[in-house]
Amino acid sequence: MKKKINTTISSSCYPFTQTLNFTKPIAQFTIFVCLSLSFQPLSSSSSSSSSSSASSNLKFKDPPPLPVLPIPSASQLQWQLGNMALFVHFGPNTFTNSEWGTGRADPSIFNPTQLDATQWVRVAKDSGFNRVILTAKHHDGFCLWPSDYTDYSVRSSPWRNGSGDVVGELAKAATDAGIALGLYLSPWDRHEPCYGTTLEYNEFYVGQMTELLTRYGDIKEVWLDGAKGENEKDMDYFFESWFSLVHQLQPGAVIFSDAGPDSRWIGDESGVAGSTCWSLFNRSAAKIGDTDFQYQREGDPVGHDWVPAECDVSIRPGWFWHASEIPKSARTLLDLYYKSVGRNCLLLLNVPPNSSGLISAEDIQALQEFSELRKSIFSQNLAANALLTASSTRGLHDSRFEPHNVLKDGIYTYWAPEENQSEWLLYLDLQHLVSFNVLQVQEPIHMGQRIVEFHLEILNADDKWKKVINGTTVGYQRLLRFPTVKSQYLRFVIDKSRDDPLISHLGVYMDQYSILSNEISNTSRHTHFNQSLFLHQIALNHSQRATV
Image (cartoon, rainbow, N blue to C red; front, side):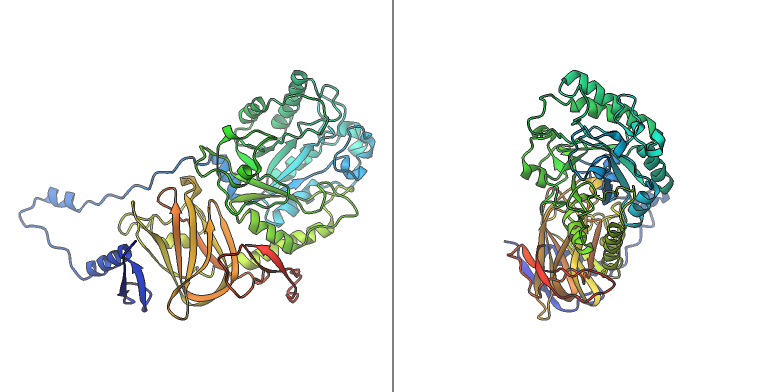
Protein backbone atom coordinates (compact mmCIF):
# COMPACT_ATOMS: atom_id res chain seq x y z
CA MET A 1 0.00 0.00 0.00
CA LYS A 2 1.30 3.48 -0.89
CA LYS A 3 2.06 5.62 2.12
CA LYS A 4 -0.07 8.77 2.42
CA ILE A 5 1.00 11.89 4.29
CA ASN A 6 -0.82 15.12 5.09
CA THR A 7 0.83 18.23 3.72
CA THR A 8 -0.27 21.86 3.79
CA ILE A 9 0.95 23.51 0.61
CA SER A 10 1.23 27.28 0.34
CA SER A 11 -0.09 29.14 -2.69
CA SER A 12 3.44 30.06 -3.74
CA CYS A 13 4.17 26.42 -4.46
CA TYR A 14 0.74 25.14 -5.45
CA PRO A 15 -2.64 26.71 -6.19
CA PHE A 16 -4.36 24.85 -3.32
CA THR A 17 -4.36 26.36 0.16
CA GLN A 18 -6.25 23.52 1.84
CA THR A 19 -4.73 20.55 3.62
CA LEU A 20 -4.81 17.76 1.06
CA ASN A 21 -3.85 14.10 1.07
CA PHE A 22 -1.11 13.58 -1.48
CA THR A 23 0.84 10.46 -2.21
CA LYS A 24 4.40 10.42 -0.96
CA PRO A 25 6.07 10.84 -4.40
CA ILE A 26 4.08 14.03 -5.02
CA ALA A 27 4.92 15.50 -1.65
CA GLN A 28 8.61 14.87 -2.17
CA PHE A 29 8.49 16.49 -5.57
CA THR A 30 6.66 19.55 -4.25
CA ILE A 31 9.03 19.98 -1.30
CA PHE A 32 11.99 19.69 -3.66
CA VAL A 33 10.67 22.44 -5.92
CA CYS A 34 9.89 24.74 -2.99
CA LEU A 35 13.28 24.25 -1.35
CA SER A 36 15.12 24.74 -4.59
CA LEU A 37 13.64 28.21 -4.94
CA SER A 38 15.15 29.23 -1.56
CA PHE A 39 18.79 28.73 -2.51
CA GLN A 40 21.14 30.48 -4.91
CA PRO A 41 23.55 28.35 -6.97
CA LEU A 42 27.13 28.17 -5.66
CA SER A 43 29.70 30.18 -7.62
CA SER A 44 32.32 28.36 -9.65
CA SER A 45 35.81 27.93 -8.26
CA SER A 46 38.14 30.76 -9.27
CA SER A 47 40.72 28.18 -10.30
CA SER A 48 38.42 26.55 -12.88
CA SER A 49 39.34 27.11 -16.46
CA SER A 50 36.95 28.93 -18.78
CA SER A 51 36.48 25.79 -20.89
CA SER A 52 35.53 23.59 -17.96
CA SER A 53 33.20 26.32 -16.65
CA ALA A 54 31.45 26.51 -20.01
CA SER A 55 31.23 22.74 -20.13
CA SER A 56 29.70 22.52 -16.67
CA ASN A 57 27.03 25.09 -17.61
CA LEU A 58 25.96 23.21 -20.69
CA LYS A 59 22.48 21.73 -20.33
CA PHE A 60 21.16 19.18 -22.75
CA LYS A 61 17.49 18.50 -23.33
CA ASP A 62 15.96 15.20 -22.42
CA PRO A 63 14.84 13.42 -25.58
CA PRO A 64 11.12 12.72 -25.99
CA PRO A 65 9.88 9.32 -24.86
CA LEU A 66 9.98 6.46 -27.32
CA PRO A 67 6.75 5.71 -29.19
CA VAL A 68 4.96 2.59 -28.01
CA LEU A 69 4.24 0.35 -30.98
CA PRO A 70 2.17 0.04 -33.03
CA ILE A 71 1.77 3.62 -34.25
CA PRO A 72 -0.35 5.07 -37.09
CA SER A 73 0.90 5.85 -40.57
CA ALA A 74 0.72 9.40 -41.91
CA SER A 75 -2.51 8.63 -43.81
CA GLN A 76 -4.07 7.01 -40.75
CA LEU A 77 -3.22 10.08 -38.67
CA GLN A 78 -4.81 12.37 -41.24
CA TRP A 79 -7.88 10.13 -41.32
CA GLN A 80 -8.27 10.10 -37.52
CA LEU A 81 -7.83 13.86 -37.15
CA GLY A 82 -10.86 14.35 -39.39
CA ASN A 83 -13.34 13.00 -36.81
CA MET A 84 -16.22 12.59 -39.28
CA ALA A 85 -16.87 11.63 -42.90
CA LEU A 86 -20.04 11.88 -44.98
CA PHE A 87 -21.22 8.72 -46.77
CA VAL A 88 -23.25 9.20 -49.97
CA HIS A 89 -25.42 6.27 -51.11
CA PHE A 90 -26.81 7.11 -54.53
CA GLY A 91 -27.83 5.14 -57.63
CA PRO A 92 -30.79 3.30 -59.21
CA ASN A 93 -32.00 2.28 -55.73
CA THR A 94 -32.75 5.97 -55.15
CA PHE A 95 -35.33 5.78 -57.94
CA THR A 96 -36.73 2.29 -57.26
CA ASN A 97 -37.35 2.75 -53.53
CA SER A 98 -35.09 -0.19 -52.71
CA GLU A 99 -31.97 -0.88 -50.64
CA TRP A 100 -30.42 -3.82 -52.47
CA GLY A 101 -30.97 -3.55 -56.19
CA THR A 102 -31.30 -6.68 -58.29
CA GLY A 103 -28.99 -5.50 -61.05
CA ARG A 104 -31.87 -5.70 -63.53
CA ALA A 105 -33.23 -2.15 -63.23
CA ASP A 106 -33.23 -0.32 -66.56
CA PRO A 107 -30.50 2.38 -66.64
CA SER A 108 -33.11 4.78 -68.02
CA ILE A 109 -34.56 5.23 -64.54
CA PHE A 110 -31.38 7.01 -63.42
CA ASN A 111 -32.06 10.67 -64.21
CA PRO A 112 -31.30 13.06 -61.31
CA THR A 113 -32.18 16.22 -63.21
CA GLN A 114 -30.92 18.62 -60.51
CA LEU A 115 -27.83 16.72 -59.40
CA ASP A 116 -25.37 19.11 -57.82
CA ALA A 117 -22.25 17.54 -56.31
CA THR A 118 -21.16 21.00 -55.18
CA GLN A 119 -24.20 21.08 -52.89
CA TRP A 120 -23.24 17.70 -51.36
CA VAL A 121 -19.75 18.95 -50.62
CA ARG A 122 -20.95 22.28 -49.26
CA VAL A 123 -23.37 20.55 -46.89
CA ALA A 124 -20.57 18.25 -45.72
CA LYS A 125 -18.08 21.07 -45.15
CA ASP A 126 -20.59 23.39 -43.45
CA SER A 127 -21.55 20.56 -41.09
CA GLY A 128 -17.98 19.79 -40.02
CA PHE A 129 -17.19 16.76 -42.21
CA ASN A 130 -13.76 16.69 -43.82
CA ARG A 131 -14.30 13.94 -46.39
CA VAL A 132 -17.04 12.51 -48.59
CA ILE A 133 -17.26 8.84 -49.55
CA LEU A 134 -19.42 7.91 -52.56
CA THR A 135 -20.88 4.53 -53.48
CA ALA A 136 -19.35 4.53 -56.95
CA LYS A 137 -20.91 1.08 -57.45
CA HIS A 138 -23.35 -0.62 -55.10
CA HIS A 139 -24.43 -4.27 -55.09
CA ASP A 140 -26.65 -3.79 -58.17
CA GLY A 141 -23.51 -3.24 -60.28
CA PHE A 142 -24.59 0.15 -61.69
CA CYS A 143 -21.55 2.41 -62.11
CA LEU A 144 -21.74 6.12 -61.36
CA TRP A 145 -18.88 6.70 -63.77
CA PRO A 146 -18.60 5.68 -67.47
CA SER A 147 -16.69 2.42 -66.99
CA ASP A 148 -15.02 0.81 -69.98
CA TYR A 149 -15.83 -2.66 -68.61
CA THR A 150 -19.64 -2.55 -68.64
CA ASP A 151 -22.53 -0.68 -70.24
CA TYR A 152 -24.46 -0.78 -66.96
CA SER A 153 -23.51 2.75 -65.99
CA VAL A 154 -24.36 6.42 -66.30
CA ARG A 155 -23.35 6.16 -69.96
CA SER A 156 -26.56 4.21 -70.64
CA SER A 157 -28.81 6.62 -68.72
CA PRO A 158 -30.62 9.75 -69.94
CA TRP A 159 -28.83 11.85 -67.31
CA ARG A 160 -26.58 14.42 -69.00
CA ASN A 161 -27.58 12.71 -72.26
CA GLY A 162 -25.39 9.74 -71.35
CA SER A 163 -22.25 11.84 -70.97
CA GLY A 164 -22.44 12.41 -67.22
CA ASP A 165 -19.98 11.26 -64.58
CA VAL A 166 -21.11 11.46 -60.93
CA VAL A 167 -17.69 10.43 -59.63
CA GLY A 168 -16.01 13.06 -61.78
CA GLU A 169 -18.36 15.86 -60.70
CA LEU A 170 -17.94 14.95 -57.03
CA ALA A 171 -14.16 14.71 -57.37
CA LYS A 172 -14.00 18.23 -58.83
CA ALA A 173 -16.35 19.65 -56.20
CA ALA A 174 -14.36 18.05 -53.40
CA THR A 175 -11.05 19.32 -54.75
CA ASP A 176 -12.41 22.84 -55.15
CA ALA A 177 -13.70 22.83 -51.56
CA GLY A 178 -10.62 21.21 -50.02
CA ILE A 179 -12.61 18.14 -48.97
CA ALA A 180 -11.09 14.65 -49.20
CA LEU A 181 -12.73 12.09 -51.49
CA GLY A 182 -13.31 8.43 -50.80
CA LEU A 183 -14.95 5.73 -52.92
CA TYR A 184 -16.85 2.51 -52.30
CA LEU A 185 -16.70 -0.16 -54.99
CA SER A 186 -18.95 -3.05 -54.01
CA PRO A 187 -17.34 -6.47 -54.43
CA TRP A 188 -20.79 -7.99 -54.89
CA ASP A 189 -22.12 -7.26 -58.38
CA ARG A 190 -25.59 -8.61 -59.15
CA HIS A 191 -25.48 -7.44 -62.77
CA GLU A 192 -22.09 -8.56 -64.07
CA PRO A 193 -22.35 -11.97 -65.85
CA CYS A 194 -18.85 -13.08 -64.81
CA TYR A 195 -19.65 -12.73 -61.12
CA GLY A 196 -19.18 -16.19 -59.63
CA THR A 197 -16.15 -17.04 -61.74
CA THR A 198 -13.36 -16.21 -59.33
CA LEU A 199 -10.46 -15.36 -61.62
CA GLU A 200 -12.49 -13.61 -64.31
CA TYR A 201 -14.46 -11.49 -61.85
CA ASN A 202 -11.40 -10.47 -59.82
CA GLU A 203 -9.79 -9.27 -63.05
CA PHE A 204 -12.98 -7.36 -63.86
CA TYR A 205 -13.04 -5.82 -60.37
CA VAL A 206 -9.38 -4.80 -60.50
CA GLY A 207 -10.03 -3.18 -63.87
CA GLN A 208 -12.83 -1.06 -62.44
CA MET A 209 -10.81 -0.21 -59.32
CA THR A 210 -7.94 0.92 -61.52
CA GLU A 211 -10.28 3.25 -63.42
CA LEU A 212 -11.44 4.87 -60.19
CA LEU A 213 -7.96 5.26 -58.77
CA THR A 214 -6.34 6.73 -61.87
CA ARG A 215 -8.99 9.08 -63.28
CA TYR A 216 -10.05 11.28 -60.40
CA GLY A 217 -7.00 12.67 -58.62
CA ASP A 218 -6.23 11.95 -54.97
CA ILE A 219 -8.46 9.35 -53.34
CA LYS A 220 -8.11 9.44 -49.55
CA GLU A 221 -10.19 6.40 -48.64
CA VAL A 222 -11.20 3.20 -50.38
CA TRP A 223 -14.14 1.62 -48.62
CA LEU A 224 -14.57 -2.13 -48.99
CA ASP A 225 -16.66 -4.87 -47.46
CA GLY A 226 -17.18 -8.57 -47.97
CA ALA A 227 -20.76 -8.15 -49.17
CA LYS A 228 -22.24 -11.28 -50.73
CA GLY A 229 -25.92 -12.12 -50.48
CA GLU A 230 -27.29 -15.39 -49.16
CA ASN A 231 -27.41 -18.19 -51.73
CA GLU A 232 -25.23 -16.07 -54.02
CA LYS A 233 -22.71 -17.65 -56.38
CA ASP A 234 -19.72 -19.03 -54.53
CA MET A 235 -16.48 -17.24 -55.31
CA ASP A 236 -13.46 -15.71 -53.59
CA TYR A 237 -12.50 -12.06 -53.43
CA PHE A 238 -8.75 -11.46 -53.79
CA PHE A 239 -8.59 -8.84 -51.06
CA GLU A 240 -4.82 -8.84 -50.64
CA SER A 241 -4.37 -8.19 -54.36
CA TRP A 242 -6.88 -5.37 -54.18
CA PHE A 243 -5.15 -3.85 -51.15
CA SER A 244 -1.79 -3.94 -52.90
CA LEU A 245 -3.25 -2.25 -55.97
CA VAL A 246 -4.82 0.53 -53.89
CA HIS A 247 -1.58 1.20 -52.04
CA GLN A 248 0.31 1.25 -55.32
CA LEU A 249 -2.03 3.62 -57.16
CA GLN A 250 -3.10 5.76 -54.20
CA PRO A 251 -0.40 5.48 -51.51
CA GLY A 252 -2.09 8.16 -49.42
CA ALA A 253 -5.41 6.32 -49.24
CA VAL A 254 -6.75 4.57 -46.15
CA ILE A 255 -8.36 1.21 -46.89
CA PHE A 256 -11.42 0.33 -44.83
CA SER A 257 -12.82 -3.18 -44.41
CA ASP A 258 -14.07 -5.51 -41.68
CA ALA A 259 -10.44 -6.25 -40.82
CA GLY A 260 -8.38 -3.34 -42.13
CA PRO A 261 -5.67 -3.03 -43.29
CA ASP A 262 -5.88 0.68 -42.40
CA SER A 263 -9.22 1.12 -40.65
CA ARG A 264 -11.75 -1.43 -39.46
CA TRP A 265 -15.50 -1.77 -39.16
CA ILE A 266 -16.86 -1.40 -35.63
CA GLY A 267 -19.06 -4.44 -36.20
CA ASP A 268 -22.54 -2.95 -36.65
CA GLU A 269 -24.34 -0.20 -38.54
CA SER A 270 -25.70 1.68 -35.53
CA GLY A 271 -22.78 4.12 -35.29
CA VAL A 272 -21.91 3.07 -31.74
CA ALA A 273 -18.47 1.95 -30.57
CA GLY A 274 -17.68 -0.03 -27.44
CA SER A 275 -16.86 1.93 -24.29
CA THR A 276 -13.45 0.27 -24.54
CA CYS A 277 -11.96 0.82 -27.98
CA TRP A 278 -8.35 0.18 -28.94
CA SER A 279 -6.83 1.21 -32.24
CA LEU A 280 -4.53 -1.76 -31.70
CA PHE A 281 -5.59 -4.88 -33.58
CA ASN A 282 -4.22 -8.14 -34.92
CA ARG A 283 -5.04 -8.40 -38.60
CA SER A 284 -3.97 -12.04 -38.52
CA ALA A 285 -6.83 -12.72 -36.10
CA ALA A 286 -9.44 -11.14 -38.38
CA LYS A 287 -11.06 -12.18 -41.63
CA ILE A 288 -13.32 -10.03 -43.77
CA GLY A 289 -16.85 -11.27 -43.28
CA ASP A 290 -15.89 -13.57 -40.42
CA THR A 291 -14.41 -11.61 -37.51
CA ASP A 292 -15.58 -11.87 -33.92
CA PHE A 293 -17.94 -8.97 -33.20
CA GLN A 294 -16.46 -8.19 -29.78
CA TYR A 295 -12.95 -8.19 -31.21
CA GLN A 296 -13.94 -5.71 -33.93
CA ARG A 297 -15.74 -3.55 -31.39
CA GLU A 298 -13.02 -3.36 -28.71
CA GLY A 299 -9.76 -3.94 -30.58
CA ASP A 300 -6.81 -5.58 -28.86
CA PRO A 301 -4.64 -4.03 -26.08
CA VAL A 302 -1.77 -6.28 -27.16
CA GLY A 303 -2.41 -6.00 -30.91
CA HIS A 304 0.51 -5.73 -33.29
CA ASP A 305 -1.24 -3.61 -35.96
CA TRP A 306 -2.66 -0.09 -35.88
CA VAL A 307 -6.20 -0.44 -37.27
CA PRO A 308 -8.55 2.21 -35.79
CA ALA A 309 -12.31 1.74 -35.96
CA GLU A 310 -14.91 3.45 -38.11
CA CYS A 311 -18.59 3.70 -37.09
CA ASP A 312 -21.00 3.79 -40.02
CA VAL A 313 -24.65 4.78 -39.65
CA SER A 314 -27.29 6.46 -41.80
CA ILE A 315 -29.08 9.68 -40.97
CA ARG A 316 -32.24 7.92 -42.18
CA PRO A 317 -33.54 4.40 -41.47
CA GLY A 318 -32.31 3.27 -44.91
CA TRP A 319 -29.01 3.79 -46.67
CA PHE A 320 -30.66 5.09 -49.84
CA TRP A 321 -33.17 7.93 -49.94
CA HIS A 322 -36.83 7.02 -49.52
CA ALA A 323 -39.59 9.62 -49.61
CA SER A 324 -41.38 8.05 -46.64
CA GLU A 325 -38.39 8.31 -44.27
CA ILE A 326 -37.27 11.19 -42.08
CA PRO A 327 -33.79 11.96 -40.75
CA LYS A 328 -32.56 11.46 -37.22
CA SER A 329 -32.79 14.48 -34.93
CA ALA A 330 -29.80 16.65 -34.10
CA ARG A 331 -29.85 15.35 -30.54
CA THR A 332 -29.71 11.75 -31.75
CA LEU A 333 -26.75 12.66 -33.96
CA LEU A 334 -25.06 14.30 -30.97
CA ASP A 335 -25.53 11.12 -28.95
CA LEU A 336 -23.94 9.14 -31.81
CA TYR A 337 -21.05 11.61 -31.86
CA TYR A 338 -20.29 10.93 -28.20
CA LYS A 339 -20.47 7.19 -28.81
CA SER A 340 -18.23 7.14 -31.90
CA VAL A 341 -15.89 10.13 -32.15
CA GLY A 342 -15.95 10.26 -28.35
CA ARG A 343 -14.80 6.64 -28.19
CA ASN A 344 -11.69 6.86 -30.36
CA CYS A 345 -13.47 6.23 -33.68
CA LEU A 346 -14.34 8.06 -36.87
CA LEU A 347 -18.06 8.66 -37.48
CA LEU A 348 -19.14 7.84 -41.03
CA LEU A 349 -22.61 9.34 -41.39
CA ASN A 350 -24.60 8.46 -44.50
CA VAL A 351 -26.65 11.31 -45.98
CA PRO A 352 -28.30 10.06 -49.20
CA PRO A 353 -29.28 12.50 -51.97
CA ASN A 354 -32.88 12.34 -53.16
CA SER A 355 -34.13 11.45 -56.64
CA SER A 356 -33.57 14.98 -57.90
CA GLY A 357 -29.88 14.63 -57.05
CA LEU A 358 -29.84 16.95 -54.03
CA ILE A 359 -29.53 16.42 -50.29
CA SER A 360 -33.00 17.03 -48.88
CA ALA A 361 -33.79 20.17 -46.90
CA GLU A 362 -34.83 18.22 -43.79
CA ASP A 363 -31.49 16.38 -43.75
CA ILE A 364 -29.61 19.67 -44.10
CA GLN A 365 -31.58 21.15 -41.20
CA ALA A 366 -30.71 18.17 -38.96
CA LEU A 367 -27.04 18.50 -39.88
CA GLN A 368 -27.04 22.26 -39.23
CA GLU A 369 -28.59 21.77 -35.81
CA PHE A 370 -26.10 18.98 -35.07
CA SER A 371 -23.27 21.36 -35.95
CA GLU A 372 -24.75 24.09 -33.72
CA LEU A 373 -24.98 21.68 -30.82
CA ARG A 374 -21.31 20.71 -31.11
CA LYS A 375 -20.19 24.33 -31.39
CA SER A 376 -22.29 25.34 -28.40
CA ILE A 377 -20.77 22.60 -26.22
CA PHE A 378 -17.17 22.39 -27.37
CA SER A 379 -16.31 25.95 -28.41
CA GLN A 380 -15.17 26.83 -24.87
CA ASN A 381 -12.94 24.63 -22.74
CA LEU A 382 -13.89 25.60 -19.18
CA ALA A 383 -10.42 24.56 -18.06
CA ALA A 384 -8.65 26.84 -20.55
CA ASN A 385 -7.32 29.17 -17.85
CA ALA A 386 -6.61 26.52 -15.24
CA LEU A 387 -3.40 26.33 -13.23
CA LEU A 388 -1.87 22.90 -13.63
CA THR A 389 0.46 20.78 -11.57
CA ALA A 390 1.54 17.21 -12.26
CA SER A 391 2.74 14.37 -10.07
CA SER A 392 5.95 14.51 -12.11
CA THR A 393 7.25 15.94 -15.38
CA ARG A 394 9.83 14.58 -17.76
CA GLY A 395 12.95 16.78 -17.70
CA LEU A 396 13.08 19.56 -15.12
CA HIS A 397 11.47 22.76 -16.47
CA ASP A 398 11.25 21.34 -20.01
CA SER A 399 8.35 23.14 -21.71
CA ARG A 400 7.93 20.33 -24.23
CA PHE A 401 6.56 18.03 -21.53
CA GLU A 402 5.03 20.38 -18.96
CA PRO A 403 1.44 19.86 -17.80
CA HIS A 404 0.14 23.15 -19.25
CA ASN A 405 0.50 21.54 -22.71
CA VAL A 406 -2.75 19.66 -22.12
CA LEU A 407 -4.65 22.93 -22.48
CA LYS A 408 -3.34 23.45 -26.01
CA ASP A 409 -5.27 22.22 -29.03
CA GLY A 410 -3.90 19.38 -31.13
CA ILE A 411 -2.09 16.14 -30.38
CA TYR A 412 1.51 17.16 -31.05
CA THR A 413 2.08 18.89 -27.71
CA TYR A 414 1.64 16.84 -24.56
CA TRP A 415 2.39 16.30 -20.90
CA ALA A 416 4.89 13.54 -20.19
CA PRO A 417 5.60 12.29 -16.65
CA GLU A 418 9.00 11.29 -15.38
CA GLU A 419 9.90 7.70 -16.17
CA ASN A 420 9.16 4.79 -13.83
CA GLN A 421 6.64 6.57 -11.61
CA SER A 422 4.14 4.75 -9.45
CA GLU A 423 1.42 7.36 -9.95
CA TRP A 424 0.33 9.61 -12.82
CA LEU A 425 -1.82 12.58 -11.87
CA LEU A 426 -2.75 16.01 -13.17
CA TYR A 427 -4.14 18.64 -10.80
CA LEU A 428 -6.22 21.51 -12.17
CA ASP A 429 -7.14 24.68 -10.32
CA LEU A 430 -9.89 26.32 -12.41
CA GLN A 431 -9.42 29.49 -10.27
CA HIS A 432 -13.15 29.69 -9.52
CA LEU A 433 -16.13 27.36 -9.14
CA VAL A 434 -17.13 25.85 -12.47
CA SER A 435 -20.08 23.65 -13.40
CA PHE A 436 -19.44 21.00 -16.05
CA ASN A 437 -20.66 17.60 -17.20
CA VAL A 438 -18.35 16.53 -20.04
CA LEU A 439 -14.72 15.40 -19.89
CA GLN A 440 -12.51 15.37 -22.99
CA VAL A 441 -9.19 13.53 -23.01
CA GLN A 442 -6.77 13.02 -25.90
CA GLU A 443 -3.53 11.09 -26.30
CA PRO A 444 -0.75 11.96 -28.77
CA ILE A 445 -1.50 8.87 -30.83
CA HIS A 446 1.54 9.37 -33.05
CA MET A 447 3.36 8.11 -29.93
CA GLY A 448 1.05 5.10 -29.60
CA GLN A 449 -2.12 4.39 -27.62
CA ARG A 450 -1.21 3.86 -23.97
CA ILE A 451 -3.91 4.54 -21.39
CA VAL A 452 -5.87 1.53 -20.15
CA GLU A 453 -7.90 3.01 -17.28
CA PHE A 454 -8.41 6.50 -15.82
CA HIS A 455 -10.78 8.50 -13.67
CA LEU A 456 -11.64 12.10 -12.79
CA GLU A 457 -12.10 13.46 -9.27
CA ILE A 458 -13.27 16.79 -7.91
CA LEU A 459 -12.61 18.42 -4.54
CA ASN A 460 -16.02 18.74 -2.92
CA ALA A 461 -17.32 21.21 -0.34
CA ASP A 462 -15.96 19.00 2.45
CA ASP A 463 -12.42 19.25 1.04
CA LYS A 464 -12.51 15.60 0.04
CA TRP A 465 -11.73 14.14 -3.35
CA LYS A 466 -14.79 12.55 -4.94
CA LYS A 467 -14.76 10.41 -8.05
CA VAL A 468 -16.88 11.82 -10.87
CA ILE A 469 -16.36 9.35 -13.71
CA ASN A 470 -14.02 6.57 -14.73
CA GLY A 471 -13.22 5.22 -18.16
CA THR A 472 -11.20 2.76 -20.17
CA THR A 473 -9.02 3.63 -23.20
CA VAL A 474 -8.52 7.11 -24.61
CA GLY A 475 -6.74 7.05 -27.96
CA TYR A 476 -7.29 10.00 -30.25
CA GLN A 477 -10.25 11.26 -28.25
CA ARG A 478 -12.44 10.24 -25.35
CA LEU A 479 -15.60 12.12 -24.40
CA LEU A 480 -17.42 11.17 -21.22
CA ARG A 481 -20.72 12.60 -20.03
CA PHE A 482 -21.87 12.60 -16.42
CA PRO A 483 -24.33 14.46 -14.18
CA THR A 484 -23.39 18.11 -13.69
CA VAL A 485 -20.85 18.79 -10.95
CA LYS A 486 -19.36 22.02 -9.60
CA SER A 487 -15.83 22.47 -8.29
CA GLN A 488 -12.71 24.60 -8.56
CA TYR A 489 -10.22 21.76 -8.14
CA LEU A 490 -9.94 18.69 -10.36
CA ARG A 491 -7.67 15.67 -10.27
CA PHE A 492 -7.22 13.53 -13.37
CA VAL A 493 -5.81 10.12 -12.46
CA ILE A 494 -4.39 7.53 -14.84
CA ASP A 495 -4.87 4.20 -13.11
CA LYS A 496 -3.32 1.87 -15.65
CA SER A 497 -1.23 2.33 -18.79
CA ARG A 498 0.71 0.21 -21.27
CA ASP A 499 3.70 2.49 -20.72
CA ASP A 500 4.36 5.93 -19.30
CA PRO A 501 1.15 7.77 -20.25
CA LEU A 502 1.10 10.92 -22.35
CA ILE A 503 -1.78 13.42 -22.43
CA SER A 504 -2.13 15.88 -25.31
CA HIS A 505 -5.40 17.52 -24.33
CA LEU A 506 -7.70 17.76 -21.34
CA GLY A 507 -10.95 19.70 -21.31
CA VAL A 508 -14.19 20.06 -19.39
CA TYR A 509 -17.38 21.37 -20.94
CA MET A 510 -21.00 22.09 -20.18
CA ASP A 511 -23.50 20.19 -22.30
CA GLN A 512 -26.90 21.68 -21.50
CA TYR A 513 -28.63 19.53 -24.09
CA SER A 514 -27.69 16.06 -22.78
CA ILE A 515 -29.15 16.53 -19.31
CA LEU A 516 -28.13 13.84 -16.84
CA SER A 517 -29.48 13.08 -13.39
CA ASN A 518 -28.10 15.08 -10.46
CA GLU A 519 -26.79 11.98 -8.72
CA ILE A 520 -23.36 10.68 -9.67
CA SER A 521 -23.17 6.92 -10.05
CA ASN A 522 -19.94 5.11 -10.74
CA THR A 523 -21.47 1.65 -10.57
CA SER A 524 -24.09 1.98 -13.28
CA ARG A 525 -23.30 2.56 -16.94
CA HIS A 526 -26.71 4.18 -17.49
CA THR A 527 -27.80 7.72 -16.71
CA HIS A 528 -30.80 9.92 -17.49
CA PHE A 529 -30.65 11.75 -20.81
CA ASN A 530 -32.84 14.61 -22.01
CA GLN A 531 -34.28 13.97 -25.47
CA SER A 532 -35.79 17.35 -26.43
CA LEU A 533 -34.52 18.77 -29.71
CA PHE A 534 -32.17 21.71 -29.86
CA LEU A 535 -34.25 24.06 -31.99
CA HIS A 536 -33.07 27.56 -31.18
CA GLN A 537 -33.14 27.11 -27.39
CA ILE A 538 -36.41 25.21 -27.02
CA ALA A 539 -36.94 24.32 -23.37
CA LEU A 540 -35.62 20.96 -22.18
CA ASN A 541 -38.13 18.71 -20.52
CA HIS A 542 -38.51 15.00 -21.27
CA SER A 543 -35.98 12.40 -20.15
CA GLN A 544 -34.91 8.94 -21.23
CA ARG A 545 -32.03 6.59 -20.54
CA ALA A 546 -28.72 6.53 -22.40
CA THR A 547 -25.30 5.07 -21.81
CA VAL A 548 -22.44 7.26 -20.65
